[in-house]
Length: 77
Image 1 (cartoon, rainbow, N blue to C red):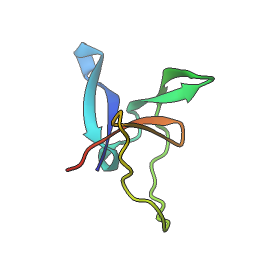
Image 2 (cartoon, one colour; image 1 turned 90 degrees about the horizontal axis):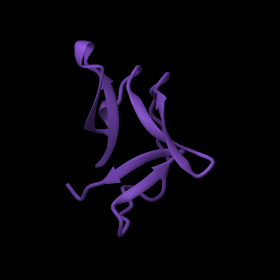
Image 3 (cartoon, one colour; image 1 turned 30 degrees about the horizontal axis):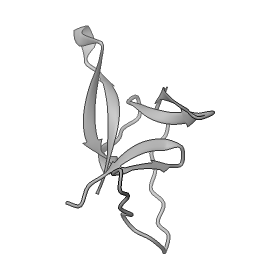
């Protein structure tokens, strides 16, 4: 399962960081994206699913992964 660090708007608390499963990312949350080699926060405007054959849930030694320029964490759960 892939986990993504997101920022959710918490009303009076402002933007609050949290870790969610990739399947639970929603429009309006902020995710970290790659911008010319730097990570910046970007608001999610569209959420969708795409299924393809190939490698599923790749593990990396750093437990991090960039998927379509979005920073993701990888878990073996």
